[in-house]
Amino acid sequence: MVAMIGDPHHDFPAELYRRNGHQMAETIPPHCPNGHRFGPGQVLVTWRPCLCTPGHTGHRSWRCQRCDEDLIWPACTRNSSIAHWDGARIHLAGPAS
Ligand SMILES: [Zn+2]
Ligand SMILES: [Zn+2]
Image (cartoon, rainbow, N blue to C red; front, side, top):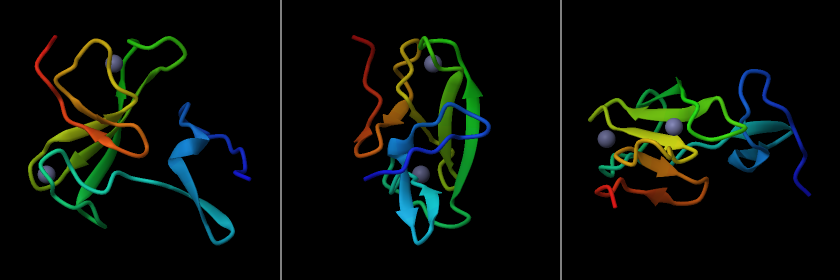
């Protein structure tokens, strides 16, 4: 069973958390869109206000400190040029279709 928890600041889903002992830890993508591994001090977690998706007020954003590329969650329906992470896989930004 996965405990349901609330995020005090954002509408961040329980799927992106994992159990770490008795605490719930937020999961982060394993690496940036360019393959740089994310570790302590190598990723800046930010929030991008955006109203593209009903029910959400923005995107969780992970910025690589080596190449400055962002990964966001959930995918932005207004800007497909940003790579996104769905909690399991990284989806690289593609050309607008
Ligand atoms: Zn990078
Ligand atoms: Zn958006």
